[in-house]
Every structure is written in structure tokens, then in C-alpha cells.
Amino acid sequence: MDDLDARLRERLTAYRNGVVTQVAGPGPDRARYLLRRRRRMTAVAVVATAVALVVAPIVANAALRGDQNQPALAASVEPTAPPTSAPPTPTPTPTPAATTDAPKPPDGRISRAQLLAAHVDLPSWPSGPAEGGCATSKVRLRTSTTQTFVSELADDAFQYGDLDDDGAVETVAVVACRYGEASAKQVVAFDRDPDGRIVTVGRVVRTGDGFDDIRAVEIKGNGSVEVRVADIVPCCGTPTYLRREQVRTYRWDGERFDQTDGPTSFGKDPRLTDLRLSMTHERTEVPGSVARRKLTIVLTVTNAGPVDAPQIAIRGFDLETSGADWSKCDPTHAAETNNRACLLPGVPAGESRRYTFVQLVPSKTGADAQTRGFWVAHHDAQDREWPDLNREDNSVDLPFKL
Image (cartoon, rainbow, N blue to C red; front, side, top):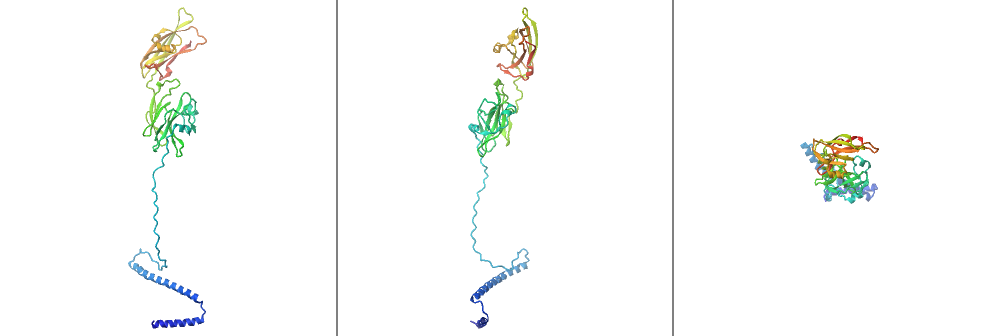
């Protein structure tokens, strides 16, 4: 140990002895506390000095370069805990890829039994008797019935197809409502909602929209609906051969069904013509008879067109016949109608035919006398009667009663 350390130790010993003898210190505990504090302060000072020595050249160097973008460094740095090894970053759980598939549409295939068991809303019925009496809200459909103003499920087969391009089928059925001998009809599309309930998509078409009957329905592969419609209902004594039919096509546009193909009206029936009837008459005495007189009637039939009438029938002869053109009448037809009608050869379009008929009538008018008249009708080669384009000029009346 050198002389400097020895001298220092001697002086410290002398100083401690002198102070201790004069001052009552706090004791060894206080001394140990002060020693630990001095050691901490010394360590802080050492660290601060080291940092200053490192930072100073850097700051000076930046100043010399004139680097204005260099961030300023702190003048002093607080001691920090030594870095510890951080735990590895956990790998995030992969998120499932979002699916773009839309929910599967409900199956709209509905059976007859299921539709009969449900309560459904129907589109409005055509104007007229059906509109005033046939229900449309929460209707429980019935099978075919003779009751009037009762909504029923027609006997037509159900049709199934994808009408709205959603990948699932819908159901098309014909519903009807009887208001007399005839019925109003509608072609209605049904589907199911997401809960499986039967709902009404809309009306494809109904009677009253330019026609009076629906004959058949078919769904095509492209989702269009073909409806065979008829201009009349063959009921109430109307023969079926008078019926005309058309096929009209309808498609769903997202809100309703619109017609996309086929005719939109029937127009005039090209099979019909316009017959016109005129008359002259004469009453004369019958020789040797006081009770009867002879009535001579001349009937002129004109075919105003546009088609030929293969045959014509004149009706109204309910009195005793006496001669003239009665021999031209078809005897079979006269027998079937009890001599009330005379079936005659036809009249081409644009031509006229005159017929003379003689009847014996009472000389005096009795209490049961009534107005007598005649009318003409168009018949085809099969003896079938056809309506006239203008019924107003098809008949004539005698100016007196018999």
C-alpha cells in the first residue's frame, strides 16, 4: 500500500474519532442507509456521464453537417430497466372467407291438398257479378261446386316451374268463382315464404280481360306461362263450336305478369256474316170461308257479308201453312222444329233471295191474339246455326196481331 493511501486512512481515522466523540450520531443503521444512498447516487451519475459522452459527439456531428431533419436527442436519459425477451407474437386465428352464396330460396312446389288446406289471398275478380260476391282475402279454396260466389280450385292440372329465376319452382293453378251457370276464372301463381307458408305471387291473367274462359295452362322451360283462352263460355245453351281459342304468353317482370307473346284480342269472328231481313205482306179473303183469310208474306233475305251463308233458316211460322215456297224448305229440319222454321239453300255474300209464304189466319182477332214476327239465321253446311254480326236487322214483325 503506498504512502498516499496510508496518510488518507490516518486522517479519516482521526476525523472519525474526533467527530464521534462530539456528536451523537444515529447509529450504525443510519450509517448503512446513508452508504446505500451514496452508492445509488454514484451509479446514476456514472450512467449519466456515460450517456453524455456518447450523445455529445453525435449532436456535434449533426450540427457540423447542418442536418435539419435529424431529430433532437434528449439532454438526459433516465435509467431504464434492461430489456427482457418479449414473448413471441401469437399467430392470429385465420378468419373464414366470407361466402357470397345467397340463402337457398324456399321450394314453391305445392300440392292440391296443401293448397286446399291453406288460407290464401286471391287477386281481384273481374268486374261484374263475380267482383261483387267472390271473396279475395284469406280464402279457403274448395273443390268444384255448384254453389255461387264460392271460390273454388278448378280441375285443371297444376303447373310447376321457375317463374322468377330464383332457382326454385313455383306453382300455377286455376281458381274459379261461379256466379251463375258460368264462372269467373284466374290463373294464379303461388309460392312459399322462408317460413314455409303458402303465399300468392300474383295473377297471370283472368277472364274478363278480352275473353271469357281459360282452357289450359302450361309453364315453358324459360319460365313463361302459356295460357289457352277462349272468347266465350259454352254454357247456357251456347254450343261449343262457337268457341274460339288463342294461346297467349305471360312472364313475371319482378312485380307482375305481363303478356309477352300471342294475340291481345279476338276481334270480329271471321266465320260470321250479316244477314238482313225485310218483309211485305197481303191479306185476302178465302172463297167460301168466313172464319179465315189468306196471308201472303214475301220475305227478302240479303247477305251483307263478309262471308257466304251456306244455308239460312227462317223462323216464326206457327200458323197453318198453305203453299208457295214451303216446298223449298228442308222437310227434316221442318219436322224437327214443328214447322216453326224453314231451312233453305244459302245466300252468297252481297246477294239477296226472296221467299214467298202463304198462311191461313183467322178473319177476326181473338182475345189471345199476339204480335207475330219472323227472323233469319245463318247456318253452315253441317246445319249448325251461327250468330249474326248485327242482330238488329235480322227480324221483322207484322203490323197487326194474330
